[in-house]
Length: 116
Length: 112
Image (cartoon, rainbow over all chains, first blue to last red; front, side, top):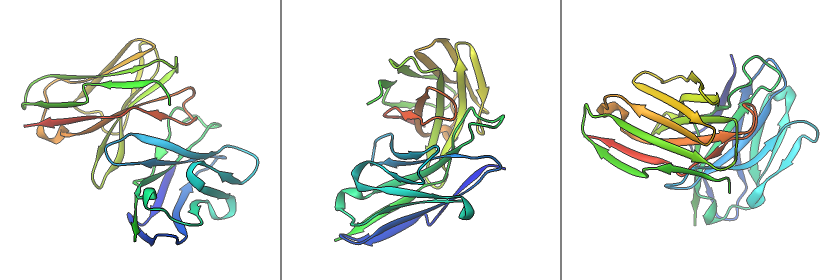
């Protein structure tokens, strides 16, 4: 079965510290992978995506993620947290070369708290 | 930003009444999706459409129906609203089913 697991429903980091949000997926075919961010009372916004090629993907607001096939992971990082990064983050996977290529599977989300 | 609007943005309704939520896009994308978001459950897919008059069920489709008579509009109907359908509803669009989705601002529905 295709799925996405985000480790930790809540993560707290100090302002200026490294942000690491973990995402693991299961897939029997090469996946597309996505990270989204949701600020309070807003819809989800695409942060970055991996399709093919370079495994380190850079996104908006200083975030990046690395696709590691051997670990089936796509963790999101940012070197230095800002207060404005406080939000909920969703990892997602899709499967363009399967017979279920008509939707994206979302993880349950990780709420990021930034401590002053 | 992708051109997606949802209406209404907020609605309070009584149990047993019908409710229709509208999603409108200006991107001419083929795929449209309806999700609900509830604390502890993340995003759950209700129904989606892969073309005009082409729809399919998601994981939580009971109690909901959809229609898509034009590329730009995707309607979600609660035939007889229940308190368990109190939620925030998001519409999303995509050019291909496996590509990134772009989300609308959401509709907060309260069923009393």
